[in-house]
Amino acid sequence: MSDTLIGDGPILLDLDGAVAHLRFNRPQASNGLDVPFLRALYEAVMTVHGEPRARAVLITGEGRHFCAGGDVKTFAAKGEALPDYLREATSWLQVCASALMRLQAPVVAAVHGFAAGGGGLGLVCASDLVLAERSAKFMLGATRVGMAPDAGGSVTLTHLVGLRKAMEIALTNPTIEAEEALRIGLITRVVDDGTVREQGLALARELAAGPTRALGETKRLLWEGLGATVEARLPDEARTVAALSGSEDAREGLAAVIERRAPEYRGR
Picture 1 (cartoon, rainbow, N blue to C red):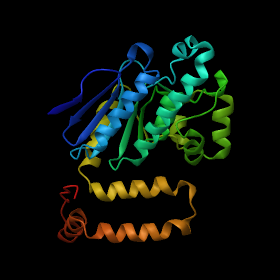
Picture 2: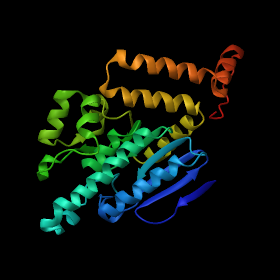
Picture 3: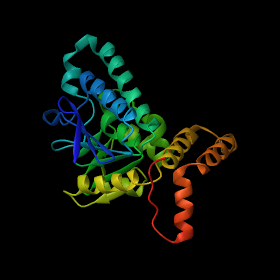
Picture 4: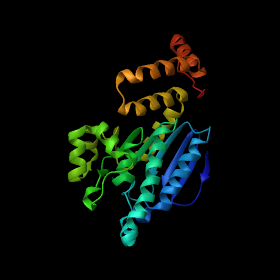
């Protein structure tokens, strides 16, 4: 049974069991980003952060597209005020991307239609696992309109696909089909059209049933390790493993292996 946390506006948020389902809700604008959208997104992510029942997150888009990037009509209407507007918008987008990476709960993005720009591709890159329908398409598109990548994409994209491929994506703005996105490491899995929300929810539920603290700490180690050497990360890894070993979930996991049964994790 779902519990509505945010029931109207450009971002919707429901709690489906232990899964926080966050939905982009500007279908008339292809879920394009403007400042009110980004403020609402940050509020939703912070709501998840403060919700102890949420053990995984699913992100989907209403309408035809996951997210087509910045709302270009809004941007164009700003005229000479556009730089100030984009400074505010980019600041909100950056904190949203960072907040997704720092959530303890693993984040699953379920993509259909287009995922473009900092809102689409950038937030895809900031998610932990990404499912995409076969007909889904990805494009960065920032330099196509005389801008540059945001949402941390200048870092995350390179780590996902490598420097040369990231350069090609950022400088030439190709439209990337789902199968190619899988091949280059941009996404996690390709699913049949019409099934991505269902399969994304199934994956999120699987994660929500797992050892929440261990998943959260593993996620943190991987994200924080992007810019570090292996040697710099070893002490933190050791401290984290030692701390997790005393958790209820760790004891349950060990007992389940010994007893040859499926573990029943409680997120503690």
